[in-house]
Amino acid sequence: MLAKRIIPCLDVDRGRVVKGIRFVSLVDAGDPIEQAKRYDAEGADELTFLDITASSDKREIVAALVRRVADEVFIPFTVGGGLRSLEDIRAVLRSGADKVSLNTAAIEEPELISKGAEVFGSQCMVVSIDARRRNPSDAGEGWSVFTYGGRKPIGLDVVEWAIETERLGAGEILLTSMDCDGTRNGYDLELTRAVSSAVRIPVIASGGAGNLNHFYQALTEGGASAVLAASLFHSGEYEIADVKNYLRARGVVVR
Amino acid sequence: MARVGIIDYGVGNLRSVEKAFAAVGCDAVVSADENVLLTVERLVLPGVGAFGACMRALTERGFDRLITERVAHGTPLLGVCVGMQMLFEESEEFGRTLGLGLLRGRVKRFSDDLVVPQVGWNQIRQRLTHPLFDGIADGAFFYFVHSYYCEPADSSVVLGETDYSVAYASVVAHENISGVQFHPEKSQAAGLRLLANFARAD
Image (cartoon, rainbow over all chains, first blue to last red):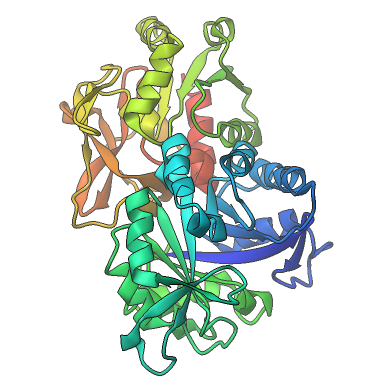
């Protein structure tokens, strides 16, 4: 059976982890390789690096990081954050990343998804969608797509955009609820369900994990193929193994 | 230990495959140089993306003939992901595309009722004992990313099966030709062990 995936997310800036697990045992908690290896040892199924480097030599800095990770960690990993062109995507994949995630660039230039899928294959094209409820208390009114940073809606419906990204050749959707992100009150299950039932590519739920049951809900009620979390692991409150043991005990197939 | 040549035909990221062999102490080289590929003792045929694009890129460089000739002379070959699919006669991706035809059978798309591509960790049920499986537990998880799967005409080549609504051939071998549908270079300890087994087997 295909296992549900647990994916920790690390924020990196200029090759250093700025939001990741505070492993007290690590010599250098800011080193992405040490963190990646630790997650790997704990049973993470994949890793996601969100690169927030704002610098003219960003491409070289990111490529150097990706090479180091690829040389030492033998599980799949995705790199996202500010990738805007085929050349940006190529640089990351050639350095050893398995997938890229596109957000703002995919909205501004949807052909980037189809071109990327054509050149590199759908399997490495993850489209990241930031969603916010039109009416916080009524999921029935749907969700709007926000660009990264989430300052303004851009007139796109989340479910329609998800269907469009699949048509363009996206291999997976990373779906973040901006209403739930950081709240620790659980994933937006209605959002996750609405998207996972509208597309046939895998949906990774993100935003809102606060306890072990939240993961279970997103993977069952929400219909997600995978769950991503940052702050819950960041705080050291739970380890990947805790999540997996909980899910396994409730009949969810995990590795 | 045998030197492994990873065939570079311009498709995909081969760095991870090379590093995975290195991590288990195997001498592997990524190369597009015919002279290198003609002298290594084992060949790995990687592949990602579309079957047709991979076959075109392979034949444009004449590597289809190189592979066929070396295999005929007994060189061990391991196809990975689309590299495994290309070992077969044809794929139904975009109509009908011919493969290398080293193994009989074809490549089919997963049913439309499923989440496709299959992305993630799934298990291998070992149908036969084989050196590729040395030290790997029956039912071990490996990392898969694919929308199509191989359907060998001769079931005796099926070493391992995986369930994704259908039970399909995820590991095949016939004499010196072998293939795995998953990515061993991304499958942690079990994947590294399989690569080491390929590099070391007699």
